[in-house]
Image (cartoon, rainbow, N blue to C red):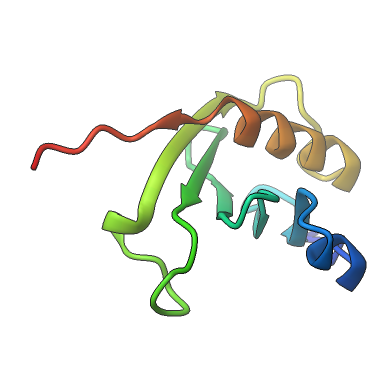
Length: 107
């Protein structure tokens, strides 16, 4: 079973708070939101039960971020996270976004 949840309110986004705008639970969980400083993020689960978070630069030029828009990444095991529970998954996402490390680019 896959659950879908919208968490953020218009007030959360207007005030620049961290907010998960969309969250789907289950073995193929995914979603997106706002960091609170103008950046957005997305997350998904991979085939190895790892949470993958991508944080994007502010002011994206289009609706779909490109690889060059990624400014930070995080991944973590979900061994102790209930991916079917919205609160548990949201907490893991929040922690992963906070721990995301800057992407190094070779120019």
